[in-house]
Length: 83
Image (cartoon, rainbow, N blue to C red):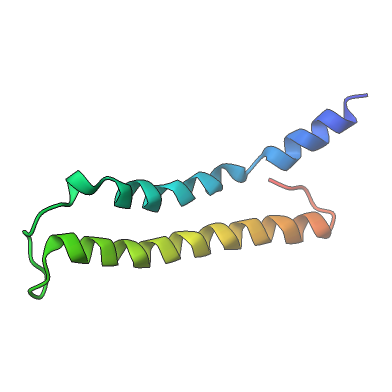
């Protein structure tokens, strides 16, 4: 009777990692927080190197979420429980 609900619940578990994808978006969208020159990094104003840093951090976060989702899919295909 409750099989369908249990299966739907198991599909939704472990998807909290996807919320990490909003972190870079929010960090770069909040321009007033980084709209300044100081501190300089190798002569580059904070405004620019902050954005460049988030490019690297965004790539790392996307990679992390992708790997976690891929592991979940592979585990489900093998018949294991999906966290």
